[in-house]
Amino acid sequence: MDKLLTLTALRRVIQLTAFVFFVYGAMIFTTFYTGDKLTQSLPALSCAYDMKGGDFCSLIPLQHQMDHRVSSIFTQGEKVLPALMGTLITLGTVAVLILILNKAFCGWLCPLGFFQDVFTMIGTKLGLTQLGSLSREAVNKIRPIKWFIFLFLVLILPLLTGIGFLGHEWGNPYCSICPSRIMTTAMGGDMSQIYISQASWGYFALSLIADLMFGLMVALALFVRQPFCRICPMLPMQTLFKKIGLLRLVKNGDSHCDSCGNCVKACPMDIYEIQDSTEHKNITHADCTLCGRCVEFCPHDGVMNLKYGPVTLLTSSKESFKKRIKIDKWWKE
Amino acid sequence: MKKGLSALFLASSLWGYGEGVIYWAPHMSHGGGHSQGKHGGHGMGEVTMLHAMNLDGNGSVTLITPDLSKDDLNLTDTALTLPKATIGGYYALVLTHRSENQVDSAIRYLSQQGRPSKISPTKLTALPKTDLEIVPDPLHREHDRYTASKSYHFVLRLHNHPLANTTVFLETRNTPAQSVITDAEGKFTVTLPNDFKNVQIGRSENKPSEFLLTTQHREGDTLYKNTLTMPYSLNPNDYWQSQPYGAGAIFIGFLGGLFFYRRHKKNQGVSRG
Ligand code: SF4
Ligand code: SF4
Ligand code: SF4
Image (cartoon, rainbow over the protein chains, first blue to last red):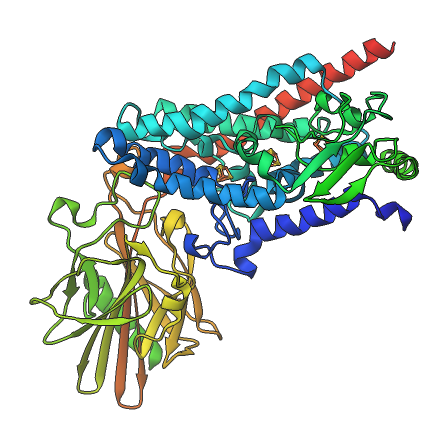
């Protein structure tokens, strides 16, 4: 029984509940109408293409707004503020959601994050050799990709489409390659999003990338933690507001932390920076999903802390570290 | 007797699209009338003018707005020009024609842009509009508009109660009527035919077609008839999108991942060895 009482176990229960709500929510609580959704600005990949879902992510309105509204500044001489209003509202909603939960949307609520976690659990149980941490060099090479995807696929290409420089297929190019679109619809029994399009070269390329990337993500997730999250355009977006988040990771490591690297080994996003010594500092990194594993796996009292406003929710300790290591061994057996 | 009537009804339906019933049809002749717009995302585009087909004599027209208030509108001959929408969302257009011993009605749902209403469109479909009513369950909208080769659910209601065991006909401009019978809860499901002609590549290159659901029920001396018309789009997966190739590409991606796994295992072996 003791085995079940870890932060990770609690997180799995919450992730599963959130998955059911975000992927099937419209069947239970709402209908599939946009107007009925809980929010259209979730800072995690809950998909608008999933008609059974109770919610959807902020990337689709952002792409549409770039294509249809912001572009009107250039095409019709529309005033800047009205043209940006929709985008500001979307960003405002994201900011509010980040204020409440910060990046925990990723580690605790995102359906695609959980989907990948499930495959990692399956891979572990199948006895596949897990990759553990990626090297620092690999991490540094991968990190800029998410910014590139965010800037180009979510903002710039849709804007250029709206202005008229690009064909219609570039109006929401990120959605066209998003693995959450394929995953959430397929989980609801709708296979229509799995396709290769021959409508034009652009459509062809995007649909091919989407399918290849989805298959790759599933296979990688069997032995790499959170493979897609590392390039997810949701992270840059959350980074914009991460400083206002009430929930955060605080390190108080000057006296005790000997940079043993346990936290980095535990971190599913391979954030090497968290082992650097600091005192009383918000160390929530751009890639952090606030999963709290670094707190669970830090062997020193009071060094790693998950805080909500002034309240400490969880703090690292020798005791809980020992217990956590045992449970980890049991799980990986 | 009932079967005989149905057969007669079927025969009359085969005569031509919507023969013998009143129904709503969008005004097709001028370019913007029923175009879907270049943006493939939402709804079925804005319709500004409709025709009350087969209406003989006077009919009353009610427009139910997204906030569920009702406006009476006037037909010019059989044409109806919609007033400019102030509220955005889903509208129901209801046409009723009463004669001795017969009540005919036709319903169509439309989307209009404007300030969004705070009321769910499921309330609009749930609201009783005619004595006999084919109700979308739910109404398919937004990114999930009615599409060929897909199945959709409806409920048949009489005086706001489900009507079981009753024949409903589905027909389109290119496919003759097929019948379906409502279940014990008045529910039925239809699959929209893939019957588009002169298909061009690209969703926005093809105009939507129309489907028509018709039904009738006799209660005492009164015969009730109801129709529902809605546009439907072609399904790209029937034409320029291939699902088997998509599944194949996913499989190749998966194999790529397994290749990385083998490399990783080899490296591990080396570093350990
Ligand atoms: S496809 Fe991806 S980015 Fe687009 S709405 Fe779905 S989850 Fe969001
Ligand atoms: S980073 Fe991962 S968990 Fe976060 S939104 Fe993207 S897919 Fe979901
Ligand atoms: S830094 Fe800690 S909380 Fe953030 S992702 Fe890594 S392990 Fe999770």
